[in-house]
Every structure is written in C-alpha cells, then in structure tokens.
Amino acid sequence: MKRPISRKEPIYKYHRAMLVDDNEMDNFINQKIIESSLFAKNIYISTNGISALEFLKNILATENLAEEIMPNVIFIDINMPLMDGFQFIDEFLKLPEKIKKKTKLVILTTSINNDDKGRALKYGNKVTFISKPLNEESLSTIH
Image 1: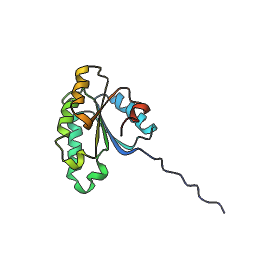
Image 2: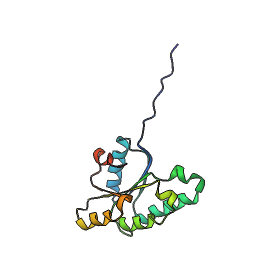
Image 3: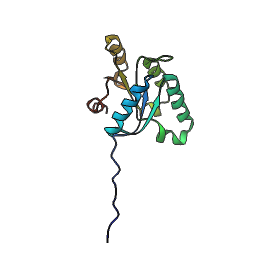
Image 4: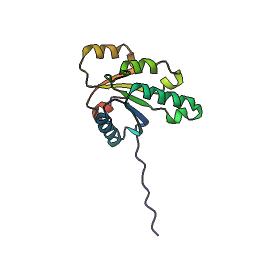
C-alpha cells in the first residue's frame, strides 16, 4: 500500500517581516531575498513610514490578533519622503511596550554617512544597522 507523500513545511527564522522603503524595486528584491533565505514566512511591504505606522496601529486595534499579525522584524530605509526612517523609529518606539519588545527594528540603507550610523547607534540594542544590498549573510546577523 502506498503512503501519501508528505511535504515538510519549510522552517522559517521568523513568521513575519515588514519592508518600509519608498523604492519599489528594492522592496521587490529584498522580498525575494527574504523568501529564498527562509527568513520570514509572511512579508508586509510599505512604501512610506506614515502608511507603515498606520498599518501597525491598525494591527494594535485588533488586540486579539495583534500578536499573530505584528511583524517580528521591520526593515526601514532611512531616506524616504514624508517620513524618514529615523522619524519612523521614533514613532514606533512610542507604541505599547508589549509590541515593541516583540519586534526587531533594522535600518536597511545605502547611506554611508557616518552621521546616520552614529544616529542609529543612539538607539542602542533597539535598532540594528545593515547596509544594502540585503543578503543571506546580513540576514544571519539579525537575532
């Protein structure tokens, strides 16, 4: 008697990640890298910090689902119109503690400006700084 073929579900490092970047091509490429490296099973994409914050606040409004939907890791570009990456981080850090402690923030940028790196360091262990392009090696540094 033949047994049905069982397929193993891939093991992902995280359940959910979010990309916040105004460059749609960067979002597409980063999404593919995250998918192929099994970094996150679900990927949310936002092209600006304001809509990303609204999305997160809407998740918080659905309190019974918030923990199942909230991204585990948020990748943030620094240079964006409307709200830059640092402004996004400042606003994110005003969200309730129960959400902040479960979400890792990662600045993902092409910036080589030492002022940006210094500004990121002021957040301490709340924020990781990674230079583009995103790759499996840089993803492995996120814990």
